[in-house]
Amino acid sequence: MIEAVLVFAFISALFELGALAYLEPRTRLRWLNRPGTITFVVTLANLLVHWGTITGSMTAATAGLASMGTTAIARWYWGWITVVDGRVRYYHGVVRFTREQLM
Image (cartoon, rainbow, N blue to C red):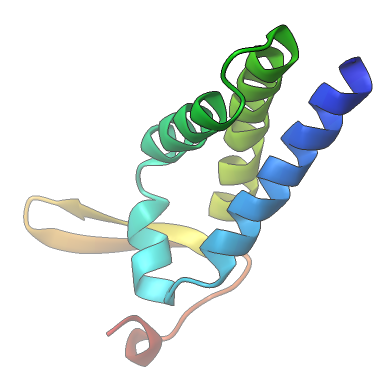
């Protein structure tokens, strides 16, 4: 049972990372400004998919924990964009985007 929980959580984390990778850089960086929201949506989606069994509930909870790690890794790798007092601030990660890529 625990193997199924860990495998499905890993698959969910890979799917989340892949979905973030396919977004445009500007959209991705704006979404990564709110890692808690991403984690909540992933956890809720997993709860809806796996509803009804104890293994499914454990999978959804573990996928939520894996999502926290996934968003942390994504923020470290790509960075994020935040708006403070009407000014856009870009916190770069390992990958640095040019101004033209973010427009």
